[in-house]
Image (spheres, rainbow over the protein chains, first blue to last red):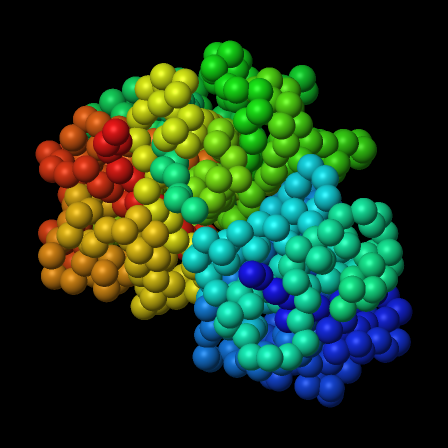
Length: 220
Length: 379
């Protein structure tokens, strides 16, 4: 059976960890990186964080909280066989616009490489995988409907199919993000966790981010 | 629970060599490249004037380049696609012209460039009433999509899946790759001592995958089996591959384990082979980590087709099946002076192929790697 051992989330006003029942306000995304370093959610500086696009930053924040919630320590140098799957609403549309508007407004002379790389929706996941040392499969997916349940279901199937022992499943938007740590139940030591199917059921009929957090809170 | 074999029952593609798998296969075997001068936007400030574009495609307000490629392909196959088929779309930029026009002309149609909009059009064309998804994993997108499809079939979640892959050569991507100084000024020369970067290409194609049980029940022609797959991530650098090839070699090991085979059974390897200094060197290191000092024929199609981005994996899987069925290893087009690391492994001419198993690998930005084991079908 697949279980979820950590869930990290954040919005413009708050952040939290659902398994360890942490819920705190913060002073805005502008100061959140320094705050996360100070609180050791990031165990070392995130290289090039200031040039990340918004989705990459949200991906890293939520992954840091989820790993903390799951009690998983990490190091950039010691890679772990953990996959990272993502799904969000608009993919990388805003980053595509930023890159191409910049290129056109500069007279079509030279595009900026550091904007171009974020025109792939998988890049925020790659930025997180580099910082957290995650060497398992990496995929961005878009689903017709029920984004979070589909994402969790795919991640669970990949673990069951033996492709990787653990996966971070992330849905990051510009204003909110959530990350789940999935594992085989047999691979974890006793502690708090919640069954994957329970979370899939709980999130299946929610429409807003707050509703989803409340629904998961109700079953943890 | 017994697992099921994922088999391909139909595939077709359009590549810079023209319409159809045969034209691509024959083009590669002829050793000529389909990389040509770009004529759809100004390249005066780009790193190169060349890309592997599909002949006779023209930018149009009515239809995107990828839809110009996909529509004839899917209209032809639609009657053979079961309506309960799940659709997986793999692309990096999809209908990017909508976004380009919205920025250049201050129009409000950028949202139409989203891949989920393209997925809806594809599902309509294919006549499926099931659901679908978009997979994005940079230049690994379509090989990752095929591996997802095979995984869903093996796990009995679905028994009919259509994988569609496409990408076009646009000012958007050409300017981007130019900014990264990743393009060869003339033509990509994978595994050559004098390689100077990749050449962009465009292509579109589909592969209909079924469980063996359903394919047999519906009396479908089976063209090959997706026998195993592995996906890994370097977790090393956002644009450069891991220099020691460990991420890719782990993907190959995972794929062999998934297929239940050893490296001795693999008869040839379709490498990602972009023609960049770092990619090709990393790939040879990864391959040697797995195969040791026992050379297996390795080839790259990208000197011929260019790097077709999100479509590259599917194009190369289709050519992999052609390799298995025709018993020929294609040449590595544009290879003149083989790099020392690739000597005895990569060749400028085609070779006979002995065996029933081949390996197809891809790597992409963000450090993602994929490996697929393809088998000739044995009932």
